[in-house]
Figure (cartoon, rainbow, N blue to C red):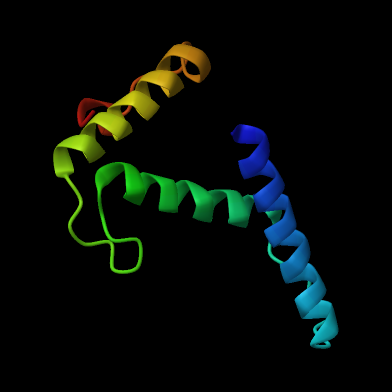
Amino acid sequence: MMAAIETAIRAASERAAEALRCAGFDEPSPAYEYFVAHAHQQLFLRLCGADTETFEGGDPEIATFVIRNARNIRDHYWAKDRPATPEDAEA
């Protein structure tokens, strides 16, 4: 499943870059991370049962669980040695 998601994100990034080139834009295309962030947002909305267009109707309890899970991953793997911040108290 993750390979399919990765392939879709890379394909979207490449299509956007090509579309910008064809339209004559000399600016760099959006970063790959932009597409990852958008996919993350859409998956979060789906997990919470929210409308992916309006963001309405999501379950705040599920959202809290997902956010807490992400914070636990952060704390356990990436932030072991950093001092606590005021935002940590909100978790």
